[in-house]
Length: 75
Image (cartoon, rainbow, N blue to C red; front, side, top):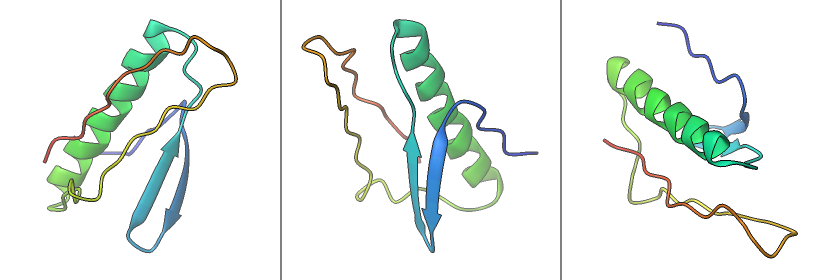
């Protein structure tokens, strides 16, 4: 299985992974959640898992109205 995260930018340092994506619509939100789901599945196939106790999501915006969503990662 090949890891493909087409629309997110990411930073990796040792055991830390940060994903970034511009979310301007509901479709963007769904696509980002799908990328998180794919990463979780890919890690599982490799015998790894996310440390969900250290998982956090954050939404930033320069606008008053943001597409707020609680992104999830399954173990």
